[in-house]
Every structure is written in C-alpha cells, then in structure tokens.
Length: 173
Image (cartoon, rainbow, N blue to C red):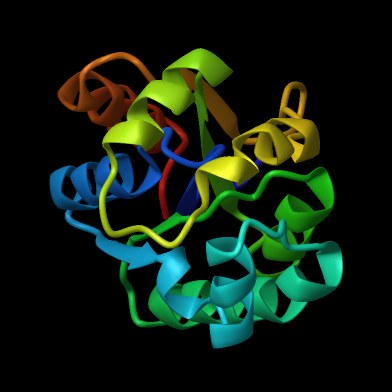
C-alpha cells in the first residue's frame, strides 16, 4: 500500500499560478505555503532577469534547500505546500529523495495562456523571453506516482478544492 502524502509541491511553468494555488491550498488545508522562488540564489535570479534559462547545475542546490525546508516542516507537524516549477523529472526526484511521501499538483496550461498571463504580471524576475524555454524543459509528470494534474485555467477555488480533496483522500499523515 502506498503511503499517504505528507507534503505537496504545486508545479508547472512560469505564470501558471503556482504561488496563488499553493497559497490557497495551504490556507484551505491548514498548511503552510513555502514560496520556492524566495530561495533562488541572487546569481540565479539575475540570470532569469537577463533572459538566461537556469541549467541543472543552477537548480541543484536550490532543490536541496527546498527539500530541507519540506523535511523541517513535516518534522514540525506542518502540512507544507511548496510552489516550485519542478519542470524535469530529475528535479522532482531530488525533492522525492528528501520527502518520500511527496505529492505533486501539476498545473497544466498552454503556451498562449502563459504568454497572456506573463504580459500582465508585474514585478517578477522571470523574463518573458524564457517562456518557450520553460515549455522546452518541461517533462510532464504523467504516470509518475502521487501526481494530480489539473487545468490551470480553472478558478483558484476549484483547483485548490480538487487538490485538498485529493490530498485528504491520499491518507495525509
């Protein structure tokens, strides 16, 4: 029998709504939201601001740090909900190594909608030039364990309710 999900990652490409959805899930589930973007190094933020995509090396220490944050939150009895792109399976596996009972909510969205949303977004470091690279990098989490795929264009309340119901049904522990 598969163990229950003890933490969530809300994942997807830029501007799909990760932070908004993660915050709504955390609030609705009595959990705590961890904003993954806050833990990028200054050098990584500058690369993205300049329109340069991060590579695996740039992301590795960041993913380790996020894993440690999840472990600490679970150890403290919290229900952590991390917003993190987690675009490649390798990145998700890094997080799963830290938290074996990790679930993922994949916000599925098309590139045209991301372009529209990104044009409206203010004050974020992600360059609009990186949208296509995000879609090129994305390895969909289809057929991976403990993944809920949702339409990112649905209302926040609908997505968060789906995710919370799915999390509860998993036997959260």
